[in-house]
Image (cartoon, rainbow, N blue to C red):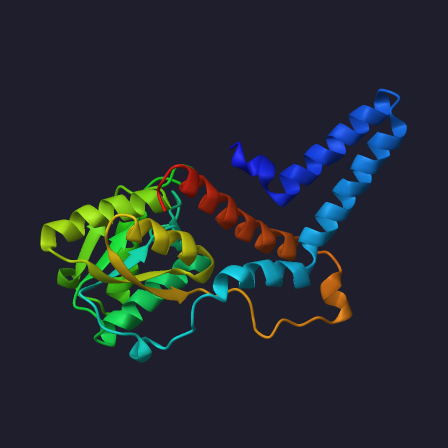
Amino acid sequence: MLTALFYPLGLGLLLAGFGLLLAALSRRRAGLALVGLAFVWLWVWSMPVFADWIRLSLEGRYPRLAAEEVLTAEAIVVLGGAFSHQHDWPYPDMSSTADRYWHGARLYHAGRAPLLILSGGRTPGRGPGLSDAAAGAVFLADLGVPAEALLLDKRALTTRGNAVEVAELLQARGITRILLVTSALHMRRSEAAFRALGLDPLPVATDFEVRTPIRRDLRRWLPNAAALAGATRAAHEYVGWWVYRVRGWV
């Protein structure tokens, strides 16, 4: 919750709030300066051209490979965060990050590894029902992945948790070389978290958000809510990276 204050919208609102407070306390010039800074801050983070640039600073580290181009390994690890479950719907609901599971199935069918590990618990706030891993197993069954090829971690709720829980499963099987599948935006922190535990992950990024080359026409310098949301996802990854570094997890 504290890190949310450092995200673009949270910090912009804090700046504007302090500015209004200063103005109310007869420090009009300083207050208006802060309000103006908040306006510029939110404008920049809401521009599609900036949102694409900051996301590409993370996604551009990883190639966009077809499943057949990926090297082979002992297991494929797919990180969760793609499903929720509603009371009035009998099936898992997928978010955009469900590309992770789809790509995991592609890699399996392409013969890149004989074992597919799904990591993800039931995150609070995503509704009752199946864990992410269990929901992913239902989805992969629909994609033709046999149950005997799956291994589920139903406890992990964070990227660090993914790494810890999967490392335990892999250690029991003597596996170190894995194909790590997650969204391109999330891969830098994920790969580092797995390496910090002595594993040898080969990053296989999917769910790319930015089209390249970045377009820079006039409309893309004007703010919109979708760009702010995309830039905030990138900010989340940078904040998460530094939190993990401070805690010694990467």
